[in-house]
Structure formats: C-alpha cells, structure tokens
Picture 1 (tube, rainbow, N blue to C red):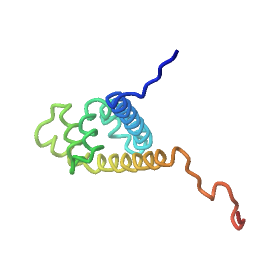
Picture 2 (picture 1 turned 30 degrees about the vertical axis):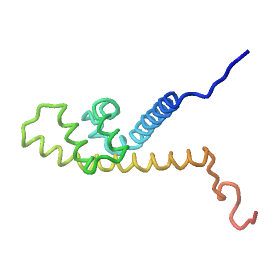
Picture 3 (picture 1 turned 180 degrees about the vertical axis):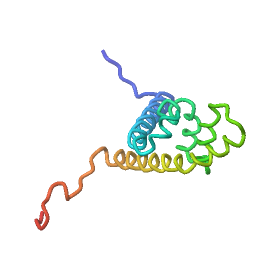
Picture 4 (picture 1 turned 90 degrees about the vertical axis):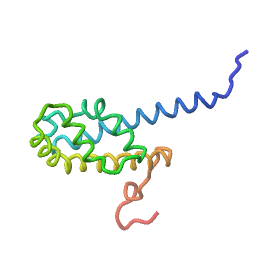
Length: 138
C-alpha cells in the first residue's frame, strides 16, 4: 500500500524558496542577455553574469526582498570592490557605473513583475490582439 502524506510546512517552504531562487536566477540571466549588448563596455569590464550571480548575489537578494533603497550605487560599489583602484579612480568609475546599474536593476524589476504576473495567471496570459484581427468581433 502506498501511503502518501502531505508535505510538512518545512518541506513546502524549502521547495518554495528554491523555486523562487531559481526563478530569480533565471530573471537575472534573462535581463543580462538583453542588457549586455547595450552596455558592452561594462559587460567587458567584469560587470557580467558571473559577477551578478556570485559576488552581487547577496545584494540582489536584498533588492528582491525590497530591503535596499539605493541599490544601484551599492551595486556599483560592489563591482569596484573587485579591483584595486585609487580612491579617485574608484569614485569616478562608481559614478559612471551607477546609472548603468540603475538601468540593469530597472530591467530586472520589470522582468520580475512580468514573471509574477505570469505566475499569478498560471502561465496563461491571453491578449485579444493575438487571436483576432482588427475590426473583427468575437
């Protein structure tokens, strides 16, 4: 006889957390694929997918939870911490990178909202424009 039980609260929470972490990683990868061609200079300067998924992961996790306000400048500072720049050069690069990081975070926020909307709809999003031609009635 097969005895199936409902998973415990711990197992359910763990499963949900892993699913959310996986979805967040996929969102970062999707956004980076769109962002990198527009900002090739910074992508080639190690503001890359590896940096975002490893070194900046704790910072982005706090951003996902809404616990950080000025994340763009913190992300730029986190990038600069990888290197040994002089104080003046570091400040200059952080100032240059901050708007670029803000653009990345904006695209990430849009992607996360789109994923949340898809999840809320169970993956089924139907726009009438996809199924009808202009001027036709249903």
